[in-house]
Length: 298
Ligand code: PAF
Image (cartoon, rainbow, N blue to C red; front, top):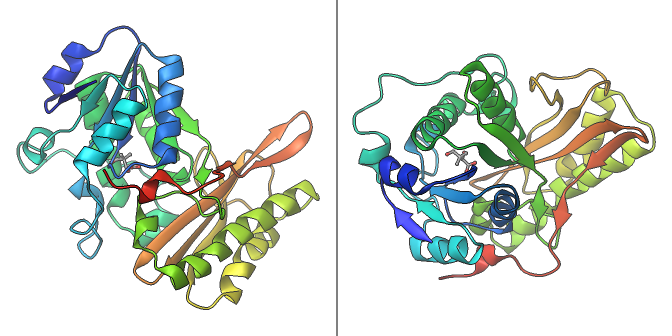
């Protein structure tokens, strides 16, 4: 694997079908599942590692976001990537950008309502990655469901030829969706956070039992979180997979998203729900059997 710092070097090394996995580092099995998918479907696998200041609000955790370059580089190499693209700030933003990307409507509810400017930051950096690296395919986790909707829409609107692939959520052995921010949780917070997964599992059961009302599914999702001390629900919303707008009924591909605060940590989770020949099928993702590599140092 080659580690490079500039767009030009990364582009020059790529050949055939280039699969890009954009990350902000502090990798876990969710990221590795994206590298695995890229490895199966691409000739060159590029992982980008850049903690993007543009997507953090002024009171958010940019300064304390977990970082460990050696650890990430080892993991990316072991996962079989060809290129680690780790630009410095000056490569990504040589000057304060006068051009940014706003994806209207799909970014207005849920996370967009709570984190103003967040999705502009995400859409801008992903646009720059697509423009600078010209990937044929790019891989994103479904845990950040509204981000996935935003990137799909941005890519289509700006005519990028890149195929956007969404991959299932990977969960820790207790069901908590993997996130680099899980490292912030202490033991008590971890117990409180468990209520999110109980909400997700209850929604999956309710869908399988025939529940189709959006408000009822949201109540089912919210109940375990509202009953648990030490955790504050931001929202539980049934949303359209194409537009991220709220749905009254489960009548098209959807996701039920939960966002909650535990101490200083915001946690997101969701269950994707698709219509198949067998009816509406919830997908809660994959659960690890043992401890996550998230807690492994370099
Ligand atoms: O999901 C993330 O880690 C980030 O939002 C992304 C897509 C790498 C853009 O900075």
